[in-house]
Length: 606
Image: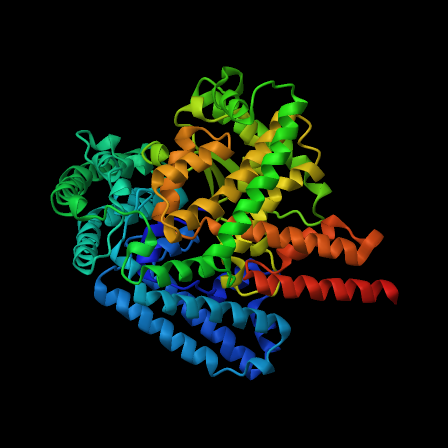
């Protein structure tokens, strides 16, 4: 799973995918920006001017996104999430779409047409979701103001100014919390609240911000380490100021927020779990399903696809059970995989070391599935302790646009007895290479695309590639152990189950308990993971549908290419073509692959 920094804040901001500033685009390109601009037509110049201006608007409106992308200009502030600012952002999207439509698309190059269409898709969908007012539900059990410190994972502290900027953000925490409370109160009045079963997790997250010792605050983390360029006296001064601000400003603000949450909000959240139970709930879920999958598939079509995939994968799991000589039923085999001590590490340190070793094992095999290896490095890090109990098994944080921060594969070390060894290869293939790190690093290296496409993220494309990458482990020779193959099938089943339980809960009236039971019956993932997953689907309706739908489309295109090209088919060329578009809707990807097939056939015949 790709994890943008402060996802909840970005949703509340109502932002479309933002394009690139000219300066950043030039820095990321091998050619000077002026050389590219000099050959553009008037229509193309108007298009790229719009991209540049909208990127700058996006950075101003979402300082968290600017920080995440390596732009430090707004590091001293949080996004303005007042109702007035949110409305202004939607008005900005309307104006941007009007300006875009005034540009003659037919006068653009094929590459610019792709950028035009992608930008239009983002703006149109941003405006379509405005009426659902999801910004009135500004936090979830996976993130929000209670975990706003998490942005520190994406920041670089290279100078004293970086620390002073962070102190400025700390001083602004009370205002950020007050804006969040205003949105939550408005949500209660509008009947737009998250499910109570999820919100019951939040008080413990808030409590982790209410510390007696300021050095134990998650916000203090940057002050535990300084670069050599900062003198000892200034370090001490910055640390003293951080302790004072945390003790006098941050902790009291969170203490008051915790009281508000318990007294005025939690009991007013909804007892139901289905998105369909919200105002305009059916239309909202239909929108989310289409938005995340970038298709027009109905909830029922997706549900039936999931059931077919579950049946197919179960049959493959039965073969593994027989291969390893397990005598019990598939359900008993699942129990064995979940509980036998040989499948688990005993300590978080051992688990982290094993994840790092797995990543190193994968790296040299990448040449078997791609001719283009991205240059940006990546590392393996533990998920922060304050969010680990309530989050997923792993996630990926992309590197900074300017190259100042590598990409990072974050792994969950909470309860190592619930993190089986057999899931480590498919998980690493998905989150690191050739999965998310590969696709994001490759995107930054696309020579002619504006940066909003290089940094863009369509879930069906991005997570579809990540899930497809898990199967590339076979092409790389990594699944020589049957239990590792069972891990790959388990992860494939995990995403197939999503199609069933997500649509089941949000469109077909399934209970949370029924969804958990269906998951446990069909996949060997541990109960800790299953419960967190089901709660994630409840909290983010529709998002989980994109993985399997995207994987099925990429796999379909691979087979189409193989049949069309025959002996001339090269898997490495196909994979490189999929990544060459950057993140786009699945229909755009399909059109590009079809064009590549036709071009390849014509080239060979000539």
